[in-house]
Structures are given as structure tokens and as C-alpha cells.
Picture 1: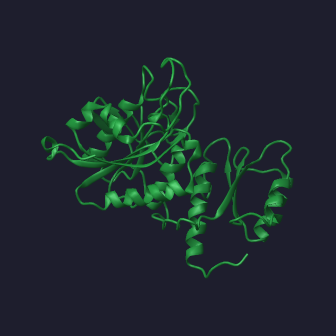
Picture 2: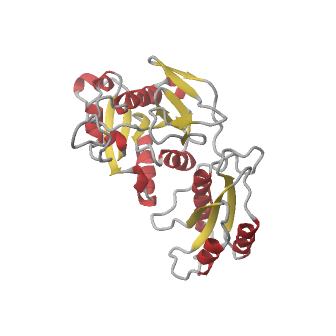
Picture 3: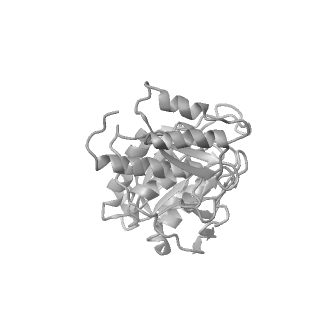
Length: 324
């Protein structure tokens, strides 16, 4: 969507749509909870916020239009490619992404690992569909654009902006299935807030170790499975994965959401040791929250999986073709 000539002197940003509740619609009574995610295009979301036209010139692109529970490696690859394309344009100040809430934290962390932190990348979402009487998406989108344009956010990297709060990609997590303020940054806390129209940043976020990782080729994402330790869980699933000859791509990594400080029971531990002996990378996070003093900087299990995916893909890219 090109801006009219009256706005040609406003700063330019790219706004990429991927779907989610923020782009959802209800077919019946707007006061009722039922709706379909990923219906409206990104242009429609922008048109619903007239104030955006007063602060920025929008270049828009619909990368996907999915419920974020259905987020895939294919969409991630395409999204990262388009983000980097737009940020490489000298006239583009930043990139804003509309997304669903269910996998927002994974997408944000993934982008923080593959996109150079030269310009802001701001993700936003909504807990209510666009047709709700009290939809939260329009204000979230306006806040996201304000953060993206703020001079203090020039080197902020990848962040999520929801309900006036700015979260680092490393820390943000969805913590409620229904509350409007559904996101938290845990013990570290958010990095800032929108106070009226002003951005207030409270702390800086160090760049992710090893980033930016190379973006895996479209069909070269390794298989990394996510499991959980709980009462009575043994090593049967791990051993089944190890013995399966039908897995394509084959198993390369396992991430375990452990109990307490990242622990697993004896039977599961024995199976994981077998996996490591057979060349499978094993990482353990906690199902409770960040583990202090660990090797993985307190990452949640889902984010630890994202990082392991990229680490394995990077290792594969430097090796001769594998034969399994």
C-alpha cells in the first residue's frame, strides 16, 4: 500500500501481516467469544487506525494469514526473508509485524537470532478479534509503530509491543489464555513502556550470543522434538523416536521441559543418554521458568528449541551432505 503524496515526507516503515487474532473476525454477535483468526489483510488493519497516517508512511506486505498455532518453518523462512528485504531498503526505518498470540514468543525469538539488529523489528498481536466491540489490536498496532519510529529504539533489535508494554524477544511469554494483558517477561521484566505517546526504555537488551545465525534453506530445517518430564514419564517416546526409520527429516535434537531447575527422572535420563550416544543433541530447560546460572541463559523450552534448530542447521551447512 503506497501512501498519498501528502504523507511523502513522513518516515517509512514496512508492516508485514501474518494473520492471528488481530486479523480475526466473528461472523455473529461481536460481543461473543467465537471468531476465526487470520481473515483480514494487513491493509485492513492499518485502515482501522487512522492515526497511523499522521505518523508514518506504510509499505505493507501480506506474508501469511494463519492462526499462529499453525505457524510453520515455511512461514518463518518467508517472514525472515521479507523482513531482511525491507530492512535493507535505505528509506525503511523499521519493520512492524502483526502476528497471532499463540506462537508470538517463538517467532520473535527466531527473528532475533537471524535478523541483524541494525533496525527495529516490532511484533504485535491482539487477544480480541478485529470485529470485537473492544478490540485491542488497533491500539497495539499504533503503539508498535510508535516504538518502531522512536529514536531511542534505533538499535532495540526484535521486541514485542502489547498493551503499552515493550518486551524483549528473549524474555517474552504468553501467560494467560484469556486476559487482555496476556504477556509477561518473567523475572527480568519488560524493557519499557508506552507512556501516552512517549517510549520509556528501562534497560538495554544485549545481542543474542552467536546471532545472527544463517537462515536455514527452505527444506533444510532439522528435526528437533520437544518433550516434558512429569510423573511416570519414562524413556519410551525417546526410544521410539530413535528407532523410527520413517522420520523425515531424521531426529537431530531433543529439548526437554524439565521439572524444577531443569531436572528429569532416572528413566527419561537414561533414554536421553542413549540419544546423545547416538549423536542426538539434547537440551533441558525448565517447565517452571528461567534456570539461573544455566548454560542457556534461562531460555524457555520452546525458545531453547528454536535456538537448537538454528545451531544444528548452521552445523549442517558447514558439513558435507549427511547420510543417515
